[in-house]
Structure formats: C-alpha cells, structure tokens
Length: 170
Image 1 (spheres, rainbow, N blue to C red):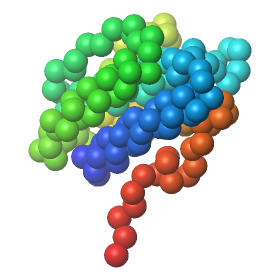
Image 2 (cartoon, one colour):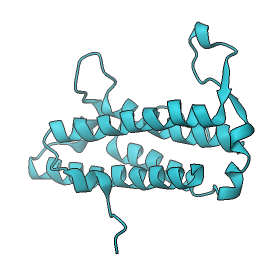
Image 3 (tube, helix red, strand yellow):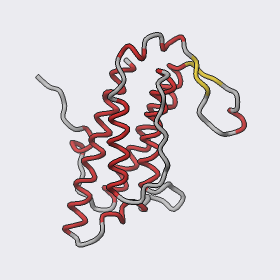
Image 4 (cartoon, rainbow, N blue to C red):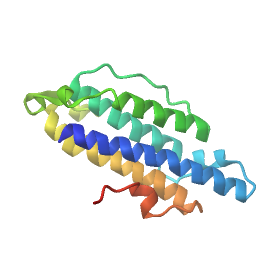
C-alpha cells in the first residue's frame, strides 16, 4: 500500500509539473512574465504558490525518508521562478523513484517522531502508518490542491483531467 501510494503521489507531482507548462503558455498568450505566479496566493494569510510547491514536495520526500529510513536530500527554500519550482518537483520525483516495495517492509511496526516544531509535539512519536495516513497524505494533497487552485484562479486553463492525469483503464 505505501509503495503504491507513493507511486500515485509521484504521478501527481508529474502532473503538477505539467500545470506549469500551461501556466507558461497562458502567461505568454497574455504577454506577462510567468514568474508572477510564484508569489500569488488565494488569500492574504495563505502561503504563496512557491511555498505550496515546497511544502508538497517536502511532505512526501520527508515522509518517504521517515518511513523507509533513506537519506533525505536537503533543499533550500529559495525558488523564485517557475523553472526553479519545476526543478524542485523533478528532483523529488527522482528521489521517490529510488524507493522500492522492500523499503516499506515492516512499516507497520515502526514509529516516527511527529514532524512538528510546535512545543506540544516535542518528543512525541506516532506509528509510521498513522504518520502516513494522518500527516503525509492529507498535507501533500492539501498543498497540491492549493497549487492547482492558485493557478486555476489566476486564469490558467486547468481542468480535472490536468489534475488526475492519465487513468489506467481497460
């Protein structure tokens, strides 16, 4: 289950990358710099698009690391352009592609530290399964949906199929 879910997450990161193709095309058609998207947000108290991408990427790479124990690549949060955000997405996809089902064997018996700097969580742990279900999955989809929504709200012609990508069918 864990390996398959990370495969779906990897697919969605790939979809996110394609959204930036459409964002670039949209900006070009309207004669503005696509890097304007990087600082946009849906609400004044919300993180901008750049931070949404960073958190979505960090959530899954750190999640895979915590669950499987592989070394996690450190990335500074310095992206200021669409191309830099795309490079970050691609680097996380490459990292996730290094995992195999074997990396997640025995996951149900592992514990992980809760990944919050808040004082009330200091020293707290949770099972790897609960961490995955209650932190990794919802946080990844929350921030990914915000990337989609910010682009869509600002005119990028995205639809449901852009979010889902190709669907396996018979």
